[in-house]
Length: 486
Image 1 (cartoon, helix red, strand yellow):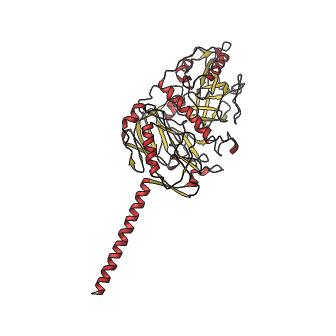
Image 2 (cartoon, one colour):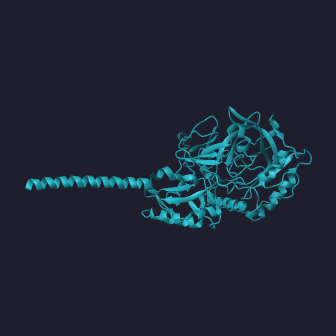
Image 3 (cartoon, rainbow, N blue to C red):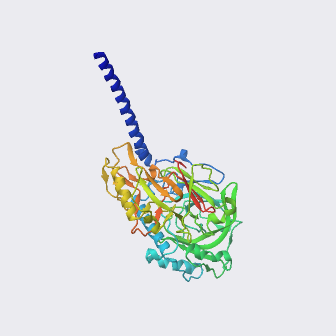
């Protein structure tokens, strides 16, 4: 009898052990489904360029580099010129304020004449209030690519921006002024394929809707003069021209419309200018429509020491899921998104879809931090805090108010965050897109609230990190896929 009881007890103990083990595995699986387990060191940039993190290489693919990282030639990888995180976020706030004002108000044209008067008029508006300015702001957290211009080719480092249309670079002889850039300033007199657009050309008239400023005419040469001012009071004024643009050794675009800047001032971070990837007819996307079918994709690396890619033409990433562009921003340069909801830690937040639809939403490569309606942000923040209770809190960094001291940890558990888009598409934000790590002692939730629920939501570039983002402009849709780069 005693032997039977012992056997029964042993069997019960084994069954209990396996049940406990199975329950433990289930809890661990649930934790993995709802949280990112991340080595804290992976959220920090390396001091050297991580060349092994380069994205997919295709025929029309360019390397994407963060302009403040060690891979950046525009800064020579010198840490001493990297701006403070508070400065980056303050400039980001200016860009957001400008985007909101641009989408809410009509852009008024002004009466300017010629290159000199154009520069003087734009300079005179530097003291004006930010919402009154036309153009678009280049933020501090941007990425750049290297393209060739002219015959013979000169390589230029250009910030790429999905919220801008006009492509421009600084040009000799800089009759007004040129800021300091790493590349040699382009000299149109040394190119056999350069020519100015005339004032009477139909190309010249497109500048009004693309830049928010009426073009003017240079009295002596009859050349079309453009002027564009950005929300941080930076500006570029020069000749609207055509030139040969070289994407790579096999792909070139002849007679590409661009701005040859003769008076350029502002915070462009050592880059040579800007590559406009907006929706206007003068944007790179529209000018190259026959070659690349109005399609491009990019992946922004996980940290500033990584390398991503900007690819023109159809994407071959089979994991990309597409949603239609929203109609909110069809009349301007920006690409609209239809956001239906957000989840934190696997649980959908109790936010009405009308909160997002009232103001609409866009995706922007130049905005650093995603801006949400205050109602949505409060719900996301509160839910995120519940999943981070074991970590000590840290002081806020500029616009980021939910920060943690992770200096005592090697591995951290971060609640997963996903966005639900139109058409049933779910975009899971990668771990590097959830925290903005100013330092190990200040790792902050990388989202911020708008001033009002009616302000437009902006899906920023931190949240886009490591995602393959595909813009099928001709097809009217945008796609997101995981693991586009490291």
